[in-house]
Amino acid sequence: MSSYETLEIEDRGFARIVRINRPKALNALNPTVIAELSRAVEELGQQLETGNWGVRALILTGAGDKAFVAGADIASMVDMNKDQAHEFASRGHAVGEMLANLAVPVIAAVNGFALGGGCELALACDFIIASDKARFGQPEVKLGVIPGFGGTQRMIRRVGIARALELCVTGDMIKADEALRIGLVNRVVAGEQLLDTCLAMVDGIAKMGPLAVAAAKRVIHQGAELPLAAANLLEVQTFAGLFETRDQSEGMRAFLEKRDAQFTGE
Ligand code: CAA
Image 1 (spheres, rainbow, N blue to C red):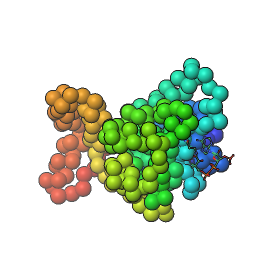
Image 2: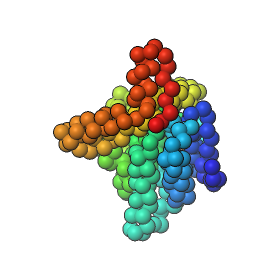
Image 3: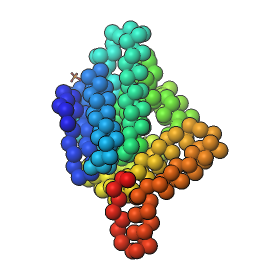
Image 4: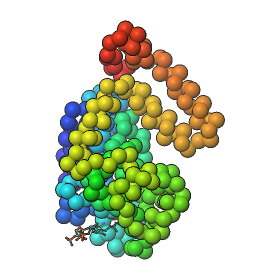
């Protein structure tokens, strides 16, 4: 693994943990963090493409106990012109797309403030597991701008248009239990349980067929953007395609033979 200035990366069991590490700035996303996140995700993507399934999920979290990510770095943005802001937002979006396209699930372990770009980064993950101390919000309007890393669009898709409007127009922060109630997060746990909860999820995922997990993620993300008939066809084709894999044969035979499946990702 290459070295990073703003990220700490650690493999634990089947999880790759990527921790954004600028606690003094509440892990705010400056251009270096965005570039390093792209590199870290690309590195994992390349590893998976070689058929190395040693990592079965990515956990994204923030250093310290106060923030996941308190937004894009306001000090880096204050003097940007229109072209620079366009470039910055495009790079943030590229990270979100890379996370969506990764062949393994991505879990946001939200350990504190997830505001602005931090909330958007969490929204770009497949699941959000939040500490009971987490706070979510899209406060960009307080700064005279709007979300630029996918917050307006991914928020609509996650919680519906009325709640997305409320968050993006008022700039209000919501607590973890409210985020759970509106479907922004999957689960809320005590802060000290957060990482273990995520690691237990990864252990569960690691017992499944990796090609099937990748296919489920792909079909759900791609299908969500398609008309229902086309999305259903995508499901049928992908389901059928898995019958050309060794894992399908192994998984079904293992069930019938009453033993655990030994998946290899082939
Ligand atoms: N960018 C840069 N620095 C930030 C930051 C950010 N988004 N958020 C916090 N910091 C820095 C603070 O400036 C402060 O630095 P100093 O110690 O050097 O003064 C340090 O982190 C600690 O923050 P506070 O003293 O403010 O801590 P607090 O407990 O009083 O408040 C907070 C915490 C409510 C999260 C508050 O820091 C805050 O409101 N942060 C800004 C949140 C925000 O507006 N995020 C959206 C950014 S815009 C965006 O993200 C655009 C986009 O979509 C791409």
